Length: 173
Image (tube, rainbow, N blue to C red; front, side, top):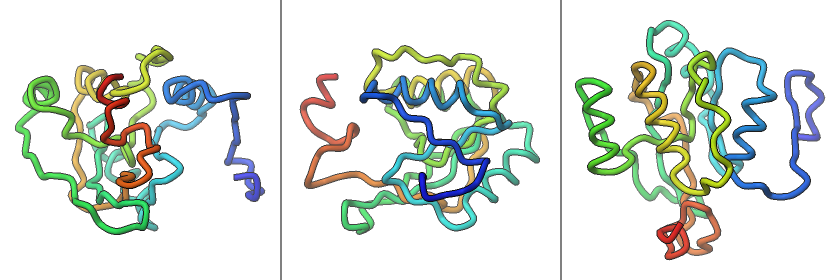
């Protein structure tokens, strides 16, 4: 980020690792646009992902847009694509979140900032913060789903240093 000379790009760092929710809270506090997009440092966006997300959400009455993701490993090998659950409405989707699991992905998720009044999030939460965000959004308005795969979401299989790795520490948290 430091290599860019563009006034629209801001680098904001904490003096130490305060966790994901503290980072999200800081990002929201310092954001100035009308839309928020989630992206981790190890995720990869397709070249036109932001354009498609913006055009889709800005012309819709939805408050959040979810693109399809492709899961990749440490070496960029494809692990799987996100499933294509079909939900009739946001209440059915909320039921799925509580009863089945998180079928939504936060990488690439674009939100209309006006509907983020639930921030700041509790800094003590170190897992499932995305589920909490999805629930808050679904309680406020409707989502829109983009069928095109726009995001490559990295899931570490070998190193297991990712906060969402399928390891005992993650399950314990």
